[in-house]
Image: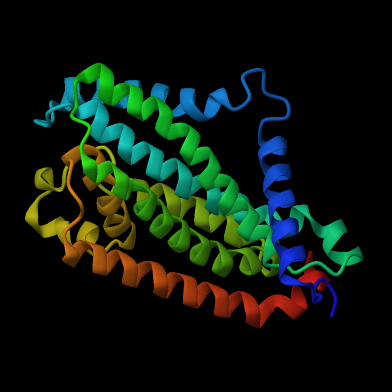
Length: 259
């Protein structure tokens, strides 16, 4: 099978680890600040959003910087992982056509490297909690579970989109537009309470909202997400992963001929 191949589980794990290392090196290869950008970029974005929304629109949210930074970290992980995953197969065309490597390793490595970046980005968030006097609660130990759900959902979406981006070049441009719309349809920088009732359904049925709430609850509200929210987020993540894995499996044999 072109671009496929059977490997021992240990070899597959080693390959994934090596690909994750490569993803991290490539992302910051020509950057003077390197991994520091993982922490600086969301902080700068938070400051801009804080000035614009808390000053101009005057949201009535206590400690708005923590609220918005938690949302920005989640969004950065999802958006950057999706964009990079869509390009992961085409950017590795030479390797795919010459070496019998499991194709799923490329989107998997992208998402795992995104998780590593998210881990680094949580450092300034912890600093912001400390500086603003936001309470550190035991619920913060739930954050890794929320990150896992976010990673599963993102991997599923990436597995679905990666082959489509190979078969149809326009998919990358279309997804860029969809991501812009999703940013505004997800309560990242605003609370749902400010939305008119007739528009809340668009946010309520946005699957990203469920994952975001599970991620933000232990950080901002200091609580473990309610079972109802957690079950919805888990269902959304599992469905996304299942659909994405099936779509990727169906298209895997043709990918090497299109990259």
